[in-house]
Image (cartoon, rainbow, N blue to C red):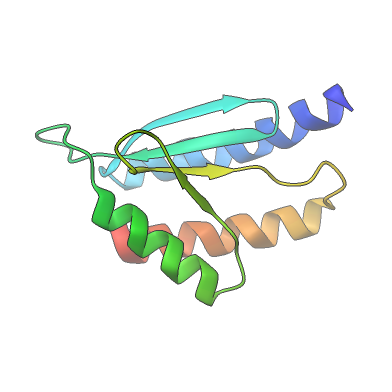
Length: 106
């Protein structure tokens, strides 16, 4: 199970790190196993972007993705794909998430 979690985490980390280079509002990406946090901050001031976080979550729900907001400043999205997820389903979910973040936060 630990190896599966690590593998999922690596796939998600590669995709989200590449996205971070395109979206300045992604301030930090943190991972542990399959769990990941994406923090949205203003690239100039480093202030939390709660509105962006809320918009990403709302649009994700419209597109069938369930995301959680977390963090003291409510500017972090937490992802935790199930360990039983098939690689095609994970890729589909990440495709949707990337498109949503590009639309909302870029």
